Image (cartoon, rainbow, N blue to C red; front, side, top):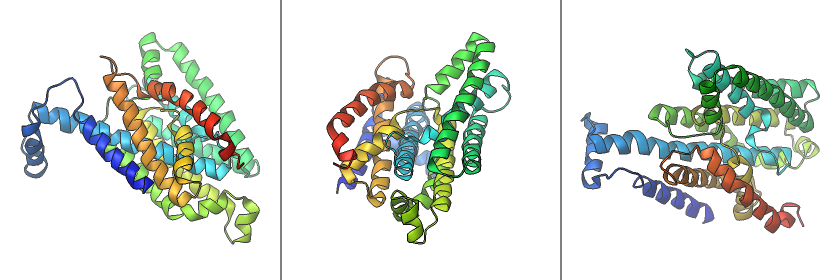
Length: 327
């Protein structure tokens, strides 16, 4: 019932957000124009362009990216049994930042999204390789991610230091995370991350429950924890890499939302995973609405999630730390 309520809130908020904006829309005509454009190829009028080409892709992209980040956070925290882990632990954000810095600072002819995706996915796969070489334990994976993230952050900082100020500013703005350039092509890319990354995780969510118990328990039940951990990391890395490539690095969603999901739905991944997907979609959609309506400027949504996420996480920590610690 709680999940259904959250799903309903996502739909209601998405519908409301379409009506929010600086332009006055003739809503009695715009829906018919969009319908005719989709099914009969009729050109969009000015209001139709605003709703169909600008607002609607941004709303859908916020829902998809929020779901990916929060769902990935729930998987990672359960898998590593650590409440302070987020999807960017595997170097996804630092790899994407490095790809962004390369695109803007050195290789302007190469699309930013492609290099950001390559950097994010390549870094996470390298973390997996280094972690496996170092023993394959959860600790080795975490340490590999931290070390590689620090190294790539230094490389990205070096590029920002040596390029001209305009390019450095463009890199910084992208790293703050934004959905202002949302398009239907970006929606398709992010949706691919959901399909390829989360369909396998959704089907294996009961095994992820067992993975959270420990390696010995998994082996006693005939489940290889190493193989399951590898599958989870690859799926999460691919989905997050695609999300980051179209939105930049948006923090706090993957860290805070899974905790809220555990409070509402419990720790069973069969309920927590779909619940976290819906909560992440709802919260990022709300944060992006604030980002684009709070001022005359289109604030990067990463700023809003950080401002809201930090005190909210402190509140959750103070109210529910006993429950998280199993007391």
